[in-house]
Length: 136
Image 1 (cartoon, one colour):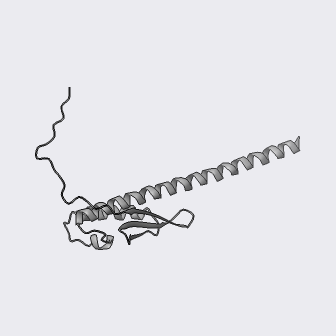
Image 2: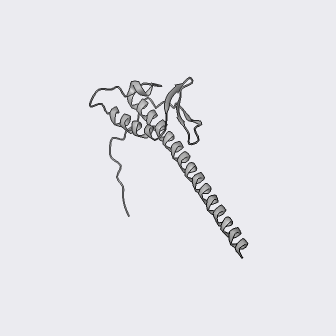
Image 3: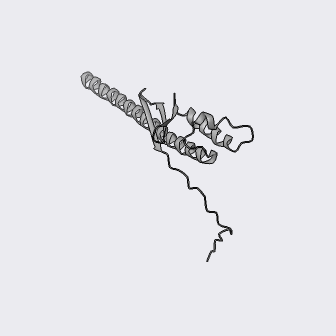
């Protein structure tokens, strides 16, 4: 009877340890997914900042040195908040026009995400009259 109790307790302890391992892997996966999502947001916002500034392939630091009252400062502050979610992050403009963000991943490895630069159209067509929504 005592032997069966010890075996059952051992199996229960191993089961709890297995659940703890699974939970830690789920947390690591969630953190890595969140970091990749934020990295994608950073690249999109950086591209929008470049389009608004009109400086193709400009580094982040030069774009965010604008004076007080600049409309670019809002985008820079959003980027700074997102970059805090990526540990040890670096922004780069790679030859060929690609934008790249690097950061330290969950397990300490260097992760990166890159996006090819897409030039904005020379002119943006804005309709003269507002579009009316008709409900029937």
